[in-house]
Image (tube, rainbow, N blue to C red; front, side):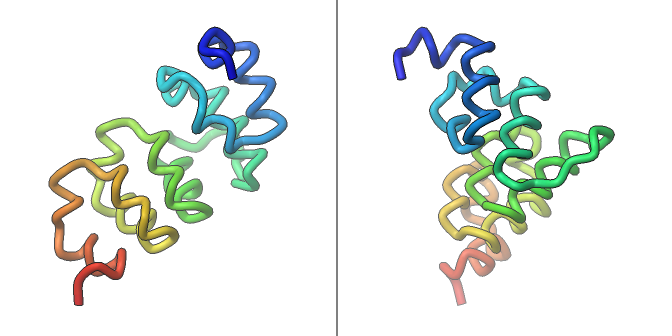
Length: 115
């Protein structure tokens, strides 16, 4: 999509309401937009009830697809429990973890990259 559309909140909200995976292509500032992220997660089949914390939403999202770690804040991409859940779901999600966890023995093992 056109860069202007990727940066238009109304457009992004509409598109992720149809296909949550489209969030991957939106301007990264929308990763912190609770309404957009929740809409995307719901259309990807993640059950949300509206009162979850950002962390609880992300745990559900990465259990569904580890690549959802991409949408997390730096704080949550540095959370070992969340990174472990993500790489157990999709080993390729390790690339979204913050540097220290990319080299963590437990995370490498969960991703199948270490015996």
